[in-house]
Image 1 (cartoon, rainbow, N blue to C red):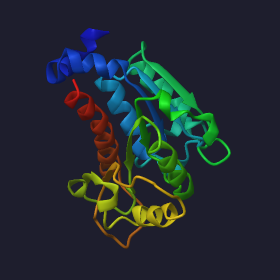
Image 2: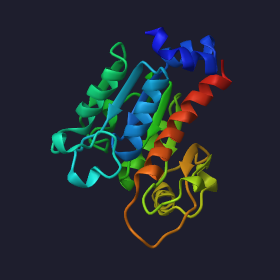
Image 3: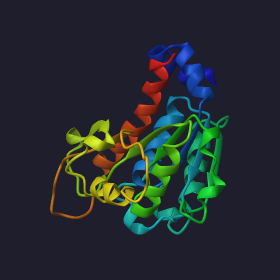
Image 4: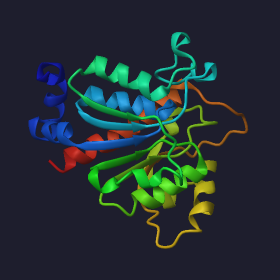
Length: 225
């Protein structure tokens, strides 16, 4: 399979590529941001990826989500994403968990066994819980803030969560995180300060959020090679 990744090896070097292949990553969310993030990771060379999501593909997902097609409406997102990722790299170790991450399932996950925990969840309560658990583990944690109501991919940024502004999701998360003691809010996230009163979202923004989230992992590995 290494011949498939010649361009990646040329870009990041064999040492970083080996680390990428050996990294154990868990991603929460297989929707808009999560799907594009997963594909970017596997196309770059990630082999060990666990994806957690409980949702099915709906017609409204077609405008922006990687696995949303007319032919698979009503099917679980994680299963469709796994099929696609294995078609990219049949040797990849792709585990999918068709569950919602929430207070009833949180204890099923030991984040200390992973190198990276990635958050692409939309639900504020579930996202809050994931942040509290992941930031207290030994894993490196990266998160995506809201891609909704954003229309300009050029506005997307990377920064510390406690410095984010103009993001309603981040604002809601701060409110919920006040209920927890000793939470590290300086974790790195993908976000956009773009403000709009319209609803909905578009594919270029969601794709860029997902690719940027994947890039955080890849560049972290490159810097540590």
